[in-house]
Image (cartoon, rainbow, N blue to C red):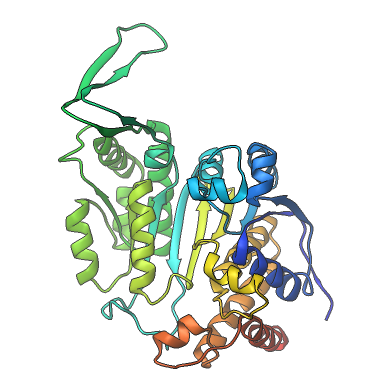
Amino acid sequence: MEKIKVMNPVVELDGDEMARVIWGWIRESLILPYLDIELKYFDYHILNRDATENRVIDQAVEAIKRYHVGAKCAAINPDQARVKEFGLKQAWKSPNAHTRNLIGGTLFRQPVICRNIPRLVPGWVKPIVVARHAFADLFDAADMTLPAGGRVSLRYVPHGPGDPVEIEVCDIAGAGAAAGIYNTKESVRGFAHSCLNFGLEQGVPVYLGTKNTAIEHYDGLFKETFQEVYEAEFRSRFAAKGIDYEHRIVDELAAFAIRSAGGFVWACKNYDGDVISDLVAAGFGSLGLMASILLTPDGRTVLTEAAHGTITRHFRDYQAGRETSTNPVASIFAWTRAIYYRGLFDATPAVQRFALALEQACTDTVEAGHLTKDLATLTGSATGLTTRQFLERIREALERNLAAPA
């Protein structure tokens, strides 16, 4: 069939290990044969990030800001073991955190629900969308080892008029560690707008979870800013749709979520969202069945990504020449969500329909019982397709979906 024309480029951020291998298979078998698309390519491979001293990330983000749509493969976040393995100059900070901080916005993670995949939390019948504030927090912390007893303080020096303020963190008796985190009013306000707009568009309530009773000022910034934005701009619109916004203590919200039927946006600080998004994915069945989208507060720039790591264990098998049964659905949805938003921003419905057809091909394939090993295990089956066999079944389902009358 004739390829579908994509009017403007998508920025492609390649990654590492098995995630990179699968990413390339998806591009070559499910994207390029069907779309006439320009990809602005940037290589996030750990050795390229090291060689460029992370400048490749800055260059990629500039391209995303220019073209407004990016799709990202999973990339290594190096610890000291990885520094030694690859001979890196240093343990570079998380490529995910670096990229998200430069773009700004909110990370929305939503489960891909397939009828035949059992839920570990069986009461969840409607999606729980985890909205993760993708800025600063523990991912941009300054931390240090305390080699012996001593005094640790937090000091603020204003740029303009005013005196410095210093408070004591602790007077520690022995060795330990300390960390400092921060956030900005502007970023939290944008986070509130993104979450509340998403809830309004989806017609579902929004709940923010913090521990402001313990961290009065830091978590209080989130609680107070969300309430300000809600009261000023969203209360009447939420009421018109019969939905609401509520702040809850985060542990209380976690207990509520487990008991609930789902069907809401769970707004989380950055670190909380990192943990809770994986918890929710597992509760719905699999981390491999999860869509992940970073949206700026104005809704005009999007970065999609695979909501999992680089799958090192499977990559070792692949390097040894063995076929793996690695689930590619999250990586496919990173491609499709980027393509969908490209079509939305360009007002090209045919591009959006292709993205939806490929997403439907994924769920059709799983629901037809064609499963990778991780999904087969969840359903009680002892065997699963290899990744390439699974991708071929998806390609066949995609062909059927594209051939069907519009």
